[in-house]
Length: 577
Image (cartoon, rainbow, N blue to C red; front, top):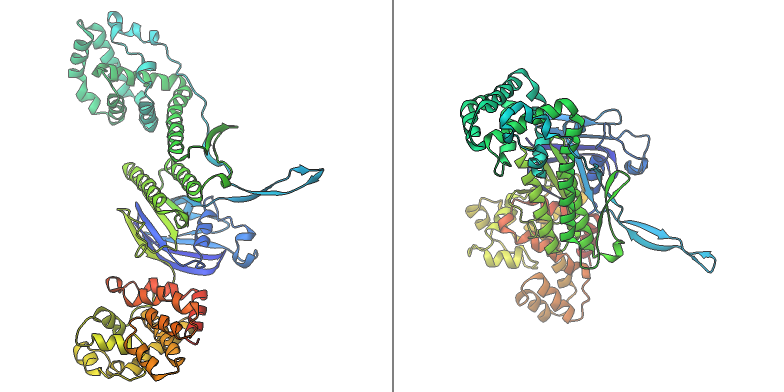
């Protein structure tokens, strides 16, 4: 079941936006968009939707328009779920968690010579991981049960010691609904029959167990709630006989009837104790040799207290905080599917820490899969997995946010895919994809071989085609070919350089001997022509577009870059320098 669309109104950078996403469950959905797109606005919208209604502070309203109504909706499995200031269908269906870097500036106010002097520092706020549970001892008296077995009291196990394993008690808490049902007539009468038989048999403890098992094993299997509890107890038997496990089930029923509160607290503490140890082990792995975060049980809450952020490396700080938040997500007791937004945490980790963080996410997905639950991990980032090879999860997909309607034209598709075809390779490179003052005519190859318009087969007409796509891009709001735009920028940069060369021999050398835009610009500088830095920097964009044969259909990645206003400003300067 996919989440196919997200609509946001009046939250942070979005006045009104509709995003097509197609998020898959139990996958890491990598949501890619350039800086300035509004990724943090998405995480803010979901963060505001964690309660029973959409609660958006004035500071998080679009342009702080507090009087405007804020809304969030998602399309899930074909149904629209909405959240507003009065209701929240999204949180009714999903658990929502948001992780973002959480460093806050603070100021200490020491007095120096009687004057208060503000001393700034960075603080990572304590992370609240939920309530504490006091250690609970089970109220259990084995002598209460021995008389029922007469001379065979030796078969009675000590539940307090046999159920001391925290894993067993954790699983028993998971099946407490089945323990509640053990008092039903069929199971309670079955216990009475087993006790009666066991009390009248002779022999060793093992032989008595074997005989009772032979008569009652099938009957236990026929009662679903009893079998559920019995299987959990047997899983951790460690030398228990079949009868030991059956009697422990009987004792659990009795304790649940006589003092359910004590039994439940005893089981809950085992879950809590395991959780606390898991946190301590995790933090122990991440902590440095001399800088440590600490787990503290304070005022009934479990808190992770972090050191001063300045004493941690950025990667260590972000990974530590990220990992603790993943643990908090994993331990959510709700059975609802979960939406987890991770806001640009990965953008600031080094390669090693990104690998570790991905391992944490894969374990989280495994935990949800094992519990037959679903989690929609949404990693918001500007790092495109197509080029950034740090993302290597087995279950991941890339979703490009924003206007992905821009598509490569057939002309640019065939030119880029087939640019090494010897019938036109040299002419394409020299006259079409780079600037040349002479008009080259290979229209027959364009049309007869590749079915393209003849007019595009004349290099100067091809430049006009590129110019038309550039104009549509800059005008905004229309459809254009982002690959053609990149080709236009490169051609224009080279034309500007050519026009500034004064002598014919140098112009001929520029055209004939300099291969590639970078080489042409280096030559221009070598003869005293100052080339703007923007012309060189833009090579990252136009070379990416014109040499990506293996990802020719990923037009959206190029289009998203071209939407960046700063990049557009650089391109406008570069084509007219």
